[in-house]
Length: 175
Image (cartoon, rainbow, N blue to C red):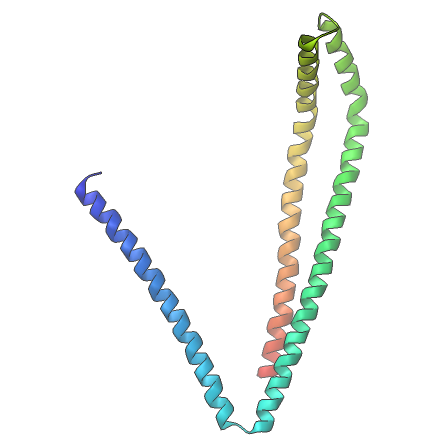
């Protein structure tokens, strides 16, 4: 690598590290400032108000924990639903394809010479694999795409709903 190019790489790496450090320092500074502000405000407001805020925060935490448990059950139910759908589609596919696949396999077996030994087994396995590829891959690819579209869409909807509840709860109680 040429010296000017190496210097560019070295400087870029240092700049990236420096920028990451600056962002981390900024984030820590903001968190520290928030803690100090909250402590200062707690000292300035009446004890009853602080106790009320603490009670509200505890209730918010309890609500968030309950929501997380609920989301866990929803996630498990969605997993089971997707699994059931896939099993049903798989059974339907096999019921539709197996008769024709068996016919094709029987025909291909007739074209293989010999009936015993490792060579015959290799050729029959190869024929079975090729037949499976011809039928399964065209079916599996769209099934995989359907699943990939469904899972992220449902996951985002659940996560967004959970965030909305938490955010709305916090905003409502502290505003």
